[in-house]
Each structure stands twice: as C-alpha cells, then as structure tokens.
Length: 137
Ligand SMILES: [Zn+2]
Image 1 (spheres, helix red, strand yellow):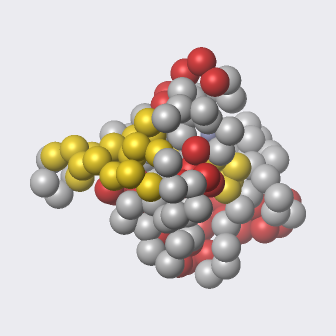
Image 2 (cartoon, helix red, strand yellow):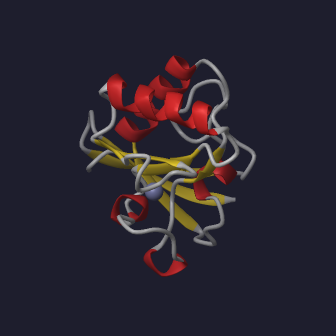
C-alpha cells in the first residue's frame, strides 16, 4: 500500500490517496500506469506527483496508441539514477521504453516532444536506451 500525494493543479490543493501496487495511479485512465510502475524500484512508502503529470501521461499513452513500458517515474534523491534527476524526485518525470526497440523509442521520443504536454524531452544522444520526459512543476 502506497500513500500517494497529488498536487491538484486545478484546485491548488494537495490530495492524499492510498493505493495498492497493482492499482492505477490517481487520475490515470485505463490502468495505463500502475502504482508499481510509477515507483519502479523506489522503496519510499510515500510517493508524490501532480494531476498535470498524470494527465500528460494519459495524453502520451493515447497518442502512442500502445502500452508504454515504464522503467520508473518516482525516485528519492538517495535512490540513485541518471543525471537530471530532480524532476524524478518531484514525481513529474518518466523514464520509459527501456524494453522497446530503437525505432520504437525514437517514435515515442518524437511523439512526446511534438505532443507539447511535456516541458522537456531528453534527446536520444543523452539517453539512447530509454525515453525521459518531464514536466517542470
Ligand atoms: Zn529520467
């Protein structure tokens, strides 16, 4: 069971949810993002994100049209990871597509960029074996 704190950008309020690992994240549609996928290997009992981040995920998944394999989204500062991690600490970044082919990753990376729903999409030159996209808070 995870405690999930979601900043609701529409009301400017924090919302608290309690969800099992195999349940969908708050504001996620069609179970395309489970709690266990959002946390990846993070051991944190508390996770946090924003409503806008979840809506951007929903849009990206819809545009891609297929399941997107998620490596992780949330990570605590001491749990390691790649450079440019601060948006992961805030729960507003994703590292996805580790199990996709290069061409599938390029499709997803280009789609994430052109969708306009993310503030930043890391170029393939920096993260060739996964796709990083994030919202700044
Ligand atoms: Zn990342």
